[in-house]
Amino acid sequence: MQTRKQRNLEIERKRKNQKRKWVGIFVMLALIAVGALGWAIWDMQARRWILDFNGERIPTSDFRFFTQGGPPLTEEFRDILLDSLISSLALMERAERYNLSATDEEIAELEDMSRQFRASEPPGSLDFISNRRMAEFYAVNPQVGPVFERAMDHFVPDYTPDEEELSLELQMHIETNREFLETPYIKYIRSSSREEVMEAESAFAEGDMVFDTIDASPLEDFFQEHTDWDTIDWDYIDAIFEVLWALELGQVSHIFEIGEYYFFVQMHERIFDYDAVEEEFREHFINRARSTEFFALIETWVEEADVNINNRTLNRF
Image (cartoon, rainbow, N blue to C red; front, side, top):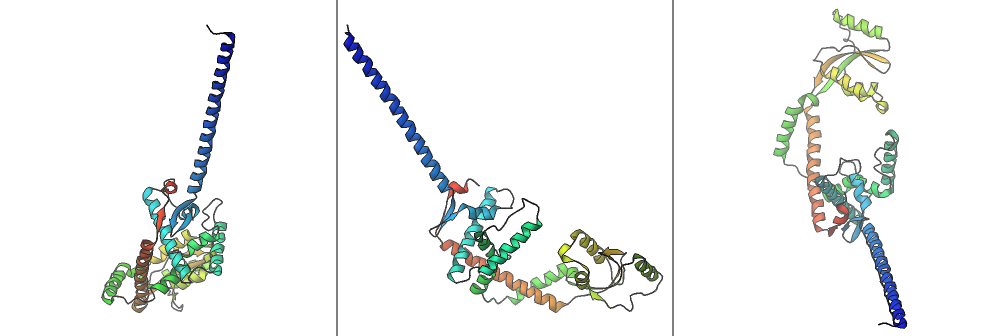
């Protein structure tokens, strides 16, 4: 049978053990919390970069530039955009090495173009250039980038086309697009008075050749002269084209309106300038071939580069 002293000692021992147990629990919880915080910080830091390109960690924001404004990202489309980012980085690296990078003036021009774009679009529309880095990416864009054109001229300065291949493609181009390669020449009556144009239309219908003393002008000149391209209504222009392209030689249109003027138009002739078509197609053929060769060269730069993709970040897209 325990004495009172022994019972008191036993109670005190249990209290100490219970205290140690709770201290251990609190220490363990603190360690878990610190570990979770550390993992969260590490994970947040890891997600700030999308890939390592030749030792440089490329921020995730660079990849977001390529994804903005596009369709929802499927895995396939995401990988295509990632390839575009890597190709752009390879081109930017070579451009810098050979002093071909975008100039301050070109960057400013791209940024100004972006501001004009945003001003003309509804609020919340695509903001495709919001800093210099984005402008640098846009400068290597194959479609409009000055760096791409400059680098292609540097690395693929000359190209001798296969004349037989060019000739075959030219003939196919002409056969397929003959109607659109011809230059229509038109004669037209123009007046701010609809009644005057209606009188001319009536006179023509009665056999009075009202267009005899009027010089024919190319259709392109007609549109340049009578269309405000800054505030153009494309639906209306398309409607006018539909009218004019439907006319056969010698035929006249119905009366239509552009701005404050009314028009009555005759299709005078359609001229096919083979030399001009051939010259334009030759330039297109050579530029296409040079672009293909340059893209292949960029691909070799990508293959030579040390690229490590951060899948932790990529899989979140």
